[in-house]
Length: 470
Image 1 (tube, helix red, strand yellow):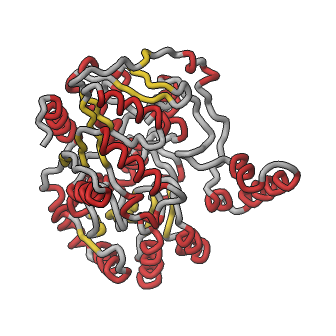
Image 2: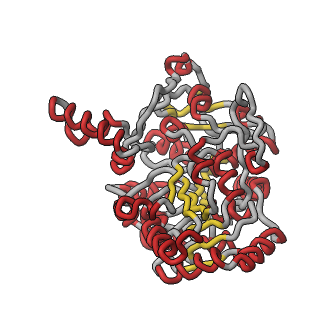
């Protein structure tokens, strides 16, 4: 989480889950019941931190987060897209040629409305606040003390590529600590075609190492647990206990970090309470639309979904709703980008809202006709549950964990079938009575909250502490 926070202004799925669980556990059991342990990416050592930072209705703010933990707000890197200088340095090196290409791309980006940078994964940054300039790097924390036998270390996120931290965990386990690793998905091993470079090798090596260190695992779905068991079998390692902790449907938009100096007095009811939303979000949602929430990448099946929408627009013309993609730019989506350029974003019927914050996401969920998530593979599927939380009908894939999230409240399609996706999407668009009936079913359903998840997690960890790890 510390490494992620250096590079990202908004939270993605795994980080959102981790922060929410920490917040709920500390609010229920008190700051003294839990302590935070992390490998500091700058000081290169394991530290322990006061958990009171996450008390109350915690709201992630990158600047505040980095200041609290003594981090710089970075200009992209492992977890974020490169800035122009980083892109040029890697592709062209340094010298006159590099400077020419730098000017060429900057001019092209200006005339293409930002598309030149987006295609190459370049982020245009304005003036960035730096934690070091504010003296945050002088903040002192207690070095993590030796963990005692019987202590439970719960790892809510991923720890691969943090070798010093992995050594700390292995040493703690050797001293008798109970290490419990949360597994969110096995994407690099189940769908390697949707990740880049040597990610599958890195992930496989990390998971093999964790099977030796971890006392037990927790999976976020039965599908993820099944994938983990398959890994145990393929790797020829002894299977470790693995409980299933189903995630929540609840969407909990965090309050803004600071109110505006003057709150706008909007005259339309749909804008009430929406005082921190960027104009680009208002603009994308000004017409009827269907929402696709999540990182815009090949695993999310965005190319097929976009082709479906082009086909629907050709048939329905002005009666077609927009399709709004909301999320950060991701991996291996060249086919999607090609289609967007070739069709002019389906003549304007497809819009992209990059990195919306929690308030903007809530606004989009409230305003959409329905949502769609036709991923090839997910570990859980937060956007499906969140759509249901807002009472919105959903079209989802019938693959991996997604049916566990939606149950009988969601319409499903084969992610590999263009025709199935189109047929189900078409019905939710044109059949208003069917859409309303689905919304009514959702309103009557009992949905799962993050407090439910935290309570279940506390039982799992308490059982582990008491030696019940089955």
